[in-house]
Image 1 (tube, rainbow over the protein chains, first blue to last red):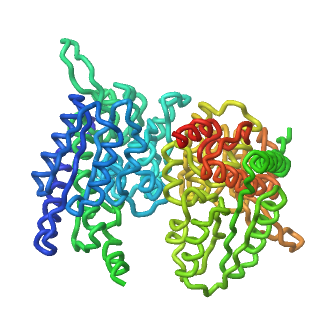
Image 2 (image 1 turned 90 degrees about the vertical axis):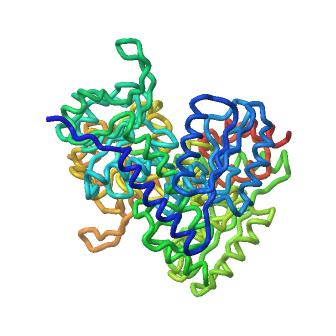
Image 3 (image 1 turned 180 degrees about the vertical axis):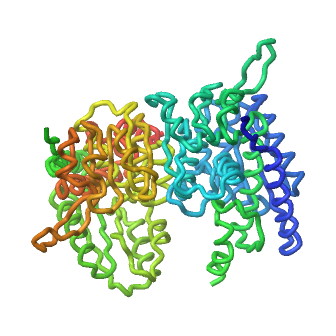
Length: 317
Length: 317
């Protein structure tokens, strides 16, 4: 039996429809059009594509989107000044600096300069810490997208065994924390993990986020496992054509898994969709608004949907 | 064969000797005597004992220690005002608010009011986030103590399988992150984890931090496992006398483990010792000093020992 593919593209589209509805509400009720600022330093072609995609989708759903393109030799101080300006600019609700940054710029200093309330990538330590503590936070977009994808195929994650391969700051580690928060038993594995195949074979859910093409083989999976492939690797097919492949050997894995995400079209679209959802959350929270009936999946956004009303009340005191 | 007991009391004493040496250096070279402020709200007897122990040990190694005892009905605003004063008081390098706080006080607001540079308990989200990102941070004391204890019996943790039972913000979660940083494959388990005994039986190291007396039985362990018991539970012995017991069935576990920590006298003393080590780290970092030959185990303190010189240089620019 072949696994059912989890259609990240369609699910991301549903999120965008929610976001567009939220934006319409915000404009109708509060005359607010949230703004997203996307900052790109240098001319890395892949980064340029990402930035264009994010800006285009942001505009399509109804954000005011602004792009700031800085030359690759820009002074760190100038970049920091721009961020400070965006921090105090009341029309901007979300700020994202596309990574990687040129070598001469201290990435950490840049990320820590962004106002945590506008940090829609969830890379500021303040947000990372609130997330780690299970508290309302602007969480990184890819882990939010992965949790969302899993929830479309399994209603109760409590007690499930999950292996997350890869422990990056933007995917593996925050994802492990989010899955732990909903009751999963999470093993945080790495490439050097002893007997990784055997470990994966015991898992109900395997998330591959190691950046290693075709790492997870079919026989690493127990029958019926859910497989989420976060990898995006450039590879050549047998005809010598470049293509994108994931961290999972898709064809093999499809024969054992119950559900699997394709690459492309799985996790990728979710990341951009959650950038948009985070920007709505930031706008609502930062402006101390209450948005009844907002997107239910952003429960880890800052503040969570369920807390929005409570917070609005609290701030009003 | 019986396990060797890891003597937390003696190891903590060695840390205190290091701290005292650091303090002597700081006074000799920079004429600085770091200050630790301990804030207690209310009269919970256990909290009062903890606070007294911390203040006594701080004074014994050479800190200026100040205790602030507030009545249990103190206004939250008054507590926050005190913290703001301590934040700007240049003679204070470390601030700790003893938990739990009375119900009418928002614990999170209190913890977030403490200057992260003086947050020697490592409970501020900024520090939790830096820790989660594997960056220099003031980390919570108990996880630092646990990693230290493990390192006294195993030189290279890379690739070892660890099960951490319990995922609290002050022990389980930060500990899992710290152990992942040194290359362990960490499974973050909870009481509802499916087949917890079997999971533990595969682990090289089992850390019990679930707050559940005698949870980990002897037959949950593989032969030669290292067992770290973070639990401190009040129980009655057969004669009806109250005593402290851990989360591990000690006698049984000792027959399978290679090394085990006792309760009391294992992890407990390490927590207070790392509070002192963190206060030195905070003093050094906050005052932008460089302390050559400082305590080597505080590599997760903020900034790490290895980065102290680099940072001092950087700040001097």
